[in-house]
Length: 251
Image 1: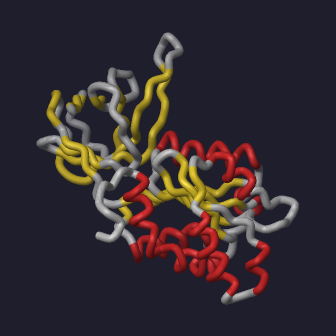
Image 2: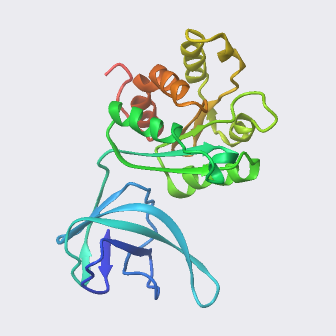
Image 3: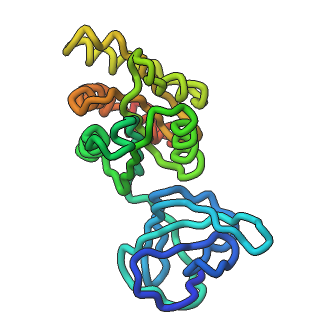
């Protein structure tokens, strides 16, 4: 794997193309590699982490993939260099469903609660979130982007798991899953029922989409923490197995 830098940039945020040059990029990787958000790329002089995959348009109208990356250390040196790809933890995305939150009328406390709870239990190298309205097509696009385009390891939704007229999270999520994780769903329900009988109303689903683990969580920060507490012991193992860990489950 090789990377080419076009100049001695001083900025910490750069755009890196894949396979070819473009007027807007600072450098490019050779070839068509299976990169994922959170990957760390290190050449002899600097180290960057991939934070967001984007598309850039060429003059002929063709889109090419590129990455927004942030320099972790070192300096950008012009030229072509051999580089190594590494992971320094898991990447996490949360999607908060809230009509009021998406309009700026409510502060999102549940998304940060997800981030903080998971970071206490696992090594998380990158965590990003978004607030969207309770609209099926917007949620579908967000899940596809997080799982199949960006490649986050863990993708959580919060909100929209009940029976209200705007609660659409499970019915949007379920058809997108390659495999379901009913054990996760049962564990979350059991943990919630120990706190309130209202937990039986939840329709939250969990499963895998591509190489991402997807979990629906309730909308309140308190319920988020209670549900996560039930599944956190299995999260790391589940992601590792999903992404090809060959070790026996008993090890």
